[in-house]
Image (tube, rainbow, N blue to C red; front, side, top):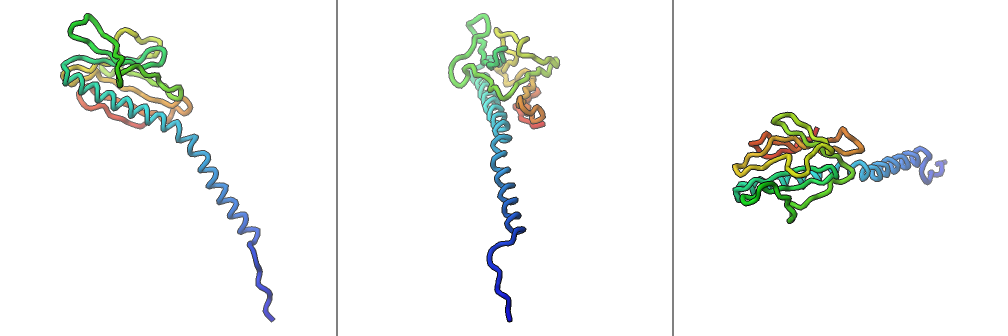
Length: 170
């Protein structure tokens, strides 16, 4: 006589399904947390790289020197050395208006020609740290963009002064 067929799932099969669902939920819930910091770093690096390229082209086309600096309040600023003025004037028009660095990241500017690293407290707010010359040259620099929460996931924007500004992940 044939035994009756079993219906339903075994306990082992149910546990395997619960473990798989738990792993998938864990990955789904944790990925926005770890990805959001990297997203902020990537966005800030992209914004700065585009602005650096724009101001470099602008300096060449207009035959005027432009500058970039970071102040102690956490703003980065853009400067112009006008032909008629005696010094640097701060730019206010878009896209070169002052911009606050997001709190989730820290930024460190290092000038490569004399290996000077600037702390935000040491920067002079009246002059740029990096100059974009009208002959397409730039003060050699390395700008590190570092998530405050995980300092190992840093990203650099750098140039030797002659080549384009490059983005490097370390």
